Length: 157
Image: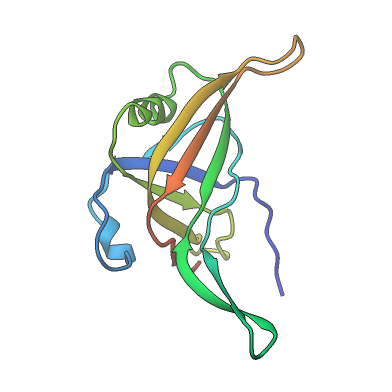
């Protein structure tokens, strides 16, 4: 069993990409022009969680649970502010629109001579706020990605 560190992972933003009625697959992201978002400090979490539907059965004296809709969450991204970084500029611009954008995470888990794993999804940029904090801190750009699709896993090879 092998585990990997998050360090070395990269986050990219693509163009506006509409949602679709079926789950995305890796080829749905072919042709995207990816721009790396620089100075990432934290990538947050991403992945499906099912809503809980409950039913209280009187005769069984038991609450029954069903799985409802799936939600891939809100990914909280933290960057050190770089006013000249093309990825951060694209992220801020995406927040000003109503569109979903393609996103790509490339992990640092490639086997020797191989390719790393990836995660692909679409999201709305729900926020892009500056955190200025105290004297001995780096100014940060905090962005929230509202994931609006399944997360496509591409395995390392």
